[in-house]
Image (spheres, rainbow, N blue to C red):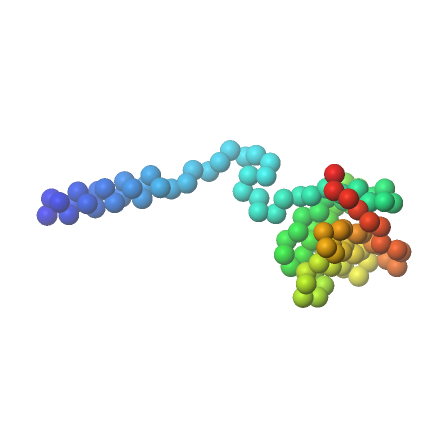
Length: 106
């Protein structure tokens, strides 16, 4: 009986010690969707966060807008007015019917 209690006590201690502590608040800690910054040929600055089914994009420091993924590839994100495209690692940004502008990471 005593050995069963000892095993139970050891099990409780092991479970308690295996809990992960909460890390200090820090930029990027625990964030599975980091922000990538880009500068486009037309001078636009983008902060892009790819979220799988959508992209969150901040243009020139403004509040980010969510652009839903278009198609099955998940490489074009658009709300009908703003479009972010990623083709073979190259990102472009377009607004309305204007020609999209190529962007590079900074």
